[in-house]
Image 1 (cartoon, rainbow, N blue to C red):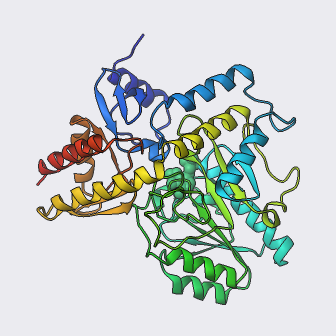
Image 2 (tube, protein in one colour):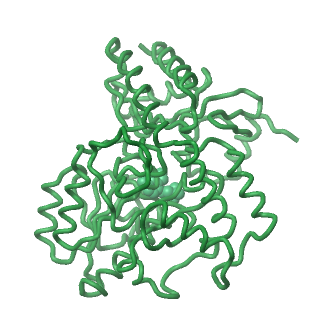
Length: 421
Ligand code: PMP
């Protein structure tokens, strides 16, 4: 039986742990840039499951690959080889220009994996004493919610009462090269620098244009691994195949001018599967990845044949539909249109972002309800978005939108904002 929205929310609230505070809308269908609630109301999805559904909901090629593979073989664990994993590892390694890939399921798992690889590399290659390695991270980072990852989070809600925390992290200001340089020069046991190319959860903070390339150069100078967490920014979201874009085979010529950076370790998740299935991965070249030996790391589901088939199809779609270019062009249009409106109002101070990862800042206290209320009104007007922090609303639609659909969304957003002036 089809439940009403209220029934479905009541069930979740009664039987589910309250570890989220969802917008009150219950979705039961998706297609491309659209989702439908159980009463049949249609919405533009302007969040894409936090940038996972870049290729659009239920993309037929991705769903087709998933269903075909599910009929053949779903899981072997890594006790045996399966005939899909090697193909995926080759495909994705070549796609992103790395020697090797380690498959996982979620973003946080892939981050944990990268931290382990980095530490083992530090002990084996740099000769840092065991238990002494330090990894530099940034203020206001978001890399997931495992016990180690929250150990270096700033978010009091994610951290408080979950200690004791994992040691071995030094936190510095984001987008501050001097802080990085100072930390590298004054700590002899630094193994890596973990960074989001754009801080997504923090509120879509875009660093200075040369921050990443200069940070990478500093890391190289100190023989420290540059670890890019592209779980949210990767897979064409920011108008390039990767926000770091080092040697990626992105066809987008318009984004030249932004320095390219090749991370030592690249972390992908979310849209690596187009949101169809949990797939994440860590990529690195042989001198780094080869520190991992049998038994060091793994997951029952990581690298399963369905994940492999889905991820290959999801990357095919990114390439075939030129999604990096699309995100680049639509993103420019989106910010240009919103900026015209922002000039006329006191309500919104700015729109920032790259490609189709954007946010607006509402001129109100961080703890006011305005952003939430705006998202409720957007919902009523047929567009789903969610505040990241207090007064910041993130906009990250699927990249498969047409220009007309994007302009339609801009109209919905502006007319909704006008209700709050
Ligand atoms: N890293 C970044 C940059 C993210 O944005 C997220 C999720 N928002 C994660 C890691 C964690 O991914 P997951 O929720 O799949 O564990």
